[in-house]
Length: 188
Image (cartoon, rainbow, N blue to C red; front, side, top):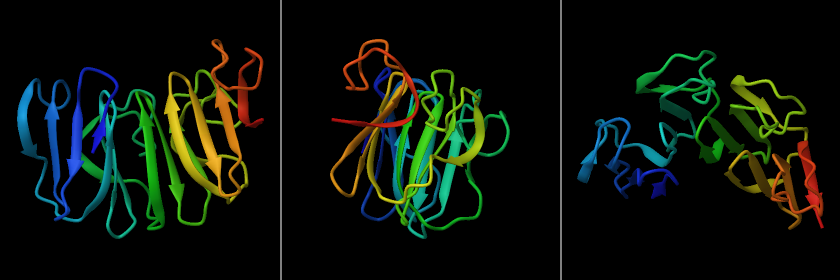
C-alpha cells in the first residue's frame, strides 16, 4: 500500500497483482471505496504521489502515469498521461520512492536513479536541472533503501551508512548545518 502525504490518496497491489486505488484527487475525486485501476494483474508494487503513479511490474519493468509538469513520469517529455506507460526498456527495477514532482528508483544491481523536479538539487545529480528521463545518481552500486520528502532524499547503503541530499533549510540532511547538498553526503 502506498499513501500520498497529500489529501489521502492511496493505492495498493493485491496478492493477485491487481492495482486498487481510493481516496481523493487525481485521477478521480473522492473515491470512497477501493476500485480496481485498469485490468492488469502483473503489478509487483506501485507508489502514488499527489498527482502521479510509478509502478514496477512482476517482470521488473517500470511504468508511470499521471501529471508530468516536471518530467516526473520519466518518459522524456512533460506530457501528462492517464495510461500506464513503460519507462525505458530495462527490466531490473527493484524499488521506487516518489514525491510530488519527482521519482527515485533502485535497480537490482544497487544503482540509484532519479528524475523530475530538481529545483533544490533533490535528484542528487549535482545540478538543479529537471530531468525527464532516469539519471543515475553517482556511480555507487550499493544502495539498499530510499526515502524522500520536502525537497530532499535520504538513502541507506548495504554497509548500513545513511546518506542525504537536496534541500537543507531546516537541517533535514542531518549533517549539522543548514547548507543544502546537490549530491549525496554521508550522515555521521
